[in-house]
Structure formats: C-alpha cells, structure tokens
Length: 199
Image (spheres, one colour):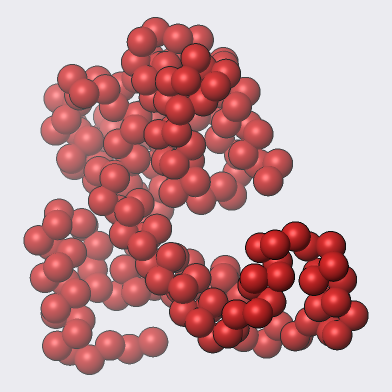
C-alpha cells in the first residue's frame, strides 16, 4: 500500500509530534498487519444452519451481531485495531527514552530486553517498551523478570498492557503494576498473566 506524498508527510509529522519513533511507512505496515488479523476478505459467509444455531444458542450479543451490517462491523473492528495500535504506541517508550528514564545507556536497555528483565514489542524496525514496567519514580518494577517470563507467546502488547492496568480480585483489587510496585509477590501476577494465553 502506497500513500500519497502529502499523506505520508502528514503522518510523519503527527508521529514526530507525539514522540513516536516510527516512519509513516512503518506505522502503516503495523496497521496493515493488525487489520489482517481482523478477518479474511475471502472468509466464507456463515451457512443458514450456522446462523440459525447462533440465533438459538449464541445469546443476546450473537443475535445482535447477526442483525448488524457486516460492513459496519468491519469498519468498527478496523477503527478498534487502529485505536489499539495508537494506544500501544502512546503507552510505551522507545529504547532511547527508556535509557533516559533509567539513567543508563541504550545498549544496557537492549541487553536487559535480551535477558528478559525488560519487555519490548516490535514496532516497525524499532522496539517499544510498555510503560507499565516502570514505577512513577522511573524505576523498573520489582519482580519484573518473573512476570515477563510468564507472558504467553503471541499475546498482543495491548492485551498485556490492558491486563497490567486492570484491578484484579486475586491481587486485593490492585492492578498487577500496583501489586508489583508495592512489593507484592511477582509469581501471583505471573500466574494470572499466563492465563492470557488460554483465551
């Protein structure tokens, strides 16, 4: 997919203004990859029998979705993917930003990512580190390596970020990040986080 020069420069300007170290082409490639996971344009439509089964056994939400315009649903899903991508970028820092935050050089941040004591996801040709890993004082949360080791392969960064910000009953209604910052047992968070791979 090729953008017009004006659209590309406009997107480059927006990304730069918000401190996102991606080019417009890289952002579009990430968006394209995210949208590819929404649905295949060649997917076969549901059969009459499948529709009837969902109407009878799928519950109220299934009946509601079956009554909606498929193009509208796809449009909303596409918007959601774009919002999630923007959110992942907004709630993360680049390697140079993480180095500045931690008071170390870039190579040390890269080394910690390789060792599993910091977690990063690919964004274009660079890596981004979700900001839930850092305390408000700019330190790495205690027990983070245990938590990172439990992140299931293939789980989207936005899913992990949402989990880390959601109060959990098992953690006395604290978020996993709050639990770690308060010195809570990281294995409690790791156990919950490992369950994300089951959904």
